[in-house]
Image 1 (cartoon, rainbow, N blue to C red):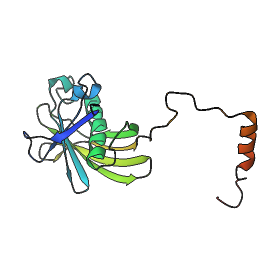
Image 2: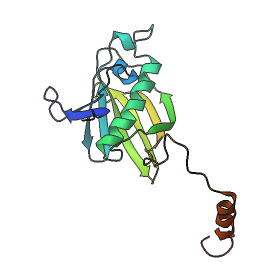
Image 3: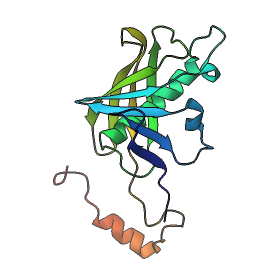
Length: 181
């Protein structure tokens, strides 16, 4: 039996929230601590509790920890919305504006919204807030590339074509003019 890469389950300690974590505790995501999410309409709310290990010299949440949290929140939200169900996806871009400091010891929450989904991409945006939601910590927008379907040639060389087969394939291709354009 294969162990799923992500464990996504109801959390009895946080009613109404789901726990979201990697099954491999040696990966980067585990440095951020426990993550919880829930879907409310078109918004995914993703939370973490910042600890001293996430702090900077000002005793606020370090910007790098915030960026890591936002990145993981994008995937928790995408999975929560059912847009990514298996495989590995990647962050293509993440634009962030830091608005204010976040205190250590008080949960921070990424409120993530899907702007658009295409066949291969998901466009998202959101806010990181703290406390009652009045303290805005960061705004962000991002693009995720969804996992590609497994290739039958992954891990091995694609079968090669003979010179005659390549020439026949080229002559059978449309010219790019007229039909099909």
